[in-house]
Image (spheres, rainbow, N blue to C red):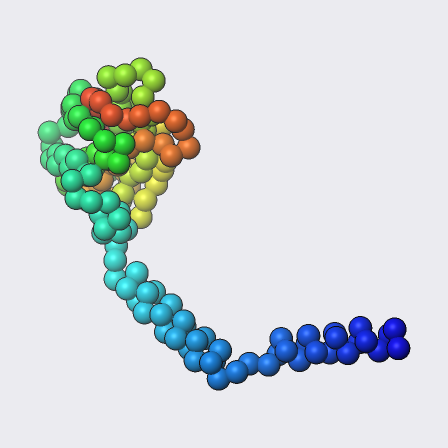
Length: 165
């Protein structure tokens, strides 16, 4: 008797786990469709579009720079919110070594070069306050500067950017 009761309970658990009702099947179908729909949507969005879609437009300080104007020393932009980022758009950049460094008006500010977006949409990073990057394909690059979510402190204040070839 002591063996039969646990055995019966075990059988009932197995049977109930394998039992699927029509409601569960329709929910599975609906969730599968939703996943397929969202994956199709995500496939049509580039990485830069995704970053822009998540962040409000006023949160991005865009700085377009023609590659022929390099080097740029002490380009200044002011970050007014911890939700802002600076996107330096380097247009028509040729192959070679790219050196970028940033500094802040406050010595203990939380600021870094978080990513570089390549012409093919791929990204590299995160970096620190200095970056040396071997540009292997000619095209448009975006350097994204913002705070590190792994550190404390604010990024609000003046950011100074130096870009050299």
